[in-house]
Image (cartoon, rainbow, N blue to C red; front, side, top):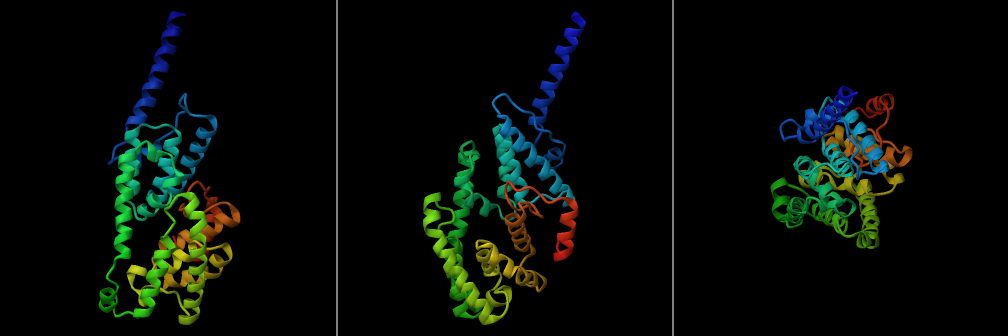
Length: 295
């Protein structure tokens, strides 16, 4: 009997050691490989609801990463850190994932847009605020762009570029504010921007992209559409698709628009850009990729 007790104690000790080792095994170099082998363990202070949610997010994120041949994007890191927060993973691990998130393409948009909707920023406030301020400075630099010089250097239409710059500023004006400010002030600006974009599209009969406003503002029309309603998003989806094909716009915004539409219509996404939304099954995903000709 004593041998049996000893075996149980040793077995439990081994499990605890493995759980602790698993938690401490992540580093900047091996994280992407180790995460795919990571299996969450429910800690005493983690509720059943939080644990099941984190399990689901981790499962879906792993699936999305594998479907992308092991390539991680900003949405993957955001999902991971959100799940790790619920699982009460250690602070160093949260910092590691956050830095990878911050340095990914589109990281600033996540950091500034969702600051009032997350909890983990309270666990890493110094690091989060450092990047938050840096991202805001980058956005301020955008608004302080020397428009006259930009127009001249790129041989662009002055009236159009100045208007698209104003649209861009208004598109982001209250998006990073507190919830009450955002809900009372941003929608009116969004509706006005949508009318302007409709007007510009009818005037130029094409996506307002790289050839018309340069690389600095090629995303603005998409951003206004992304922040609109389902009817407008679906109406402009083929226009955005053609813009990508014509090299007027990068393909990432197109994928994000597809995800937004499918999230609103079917409660699932295709490319993994939407936070906390389940991924479509593989069959559906392959059908959508084939339909729109985009990986």
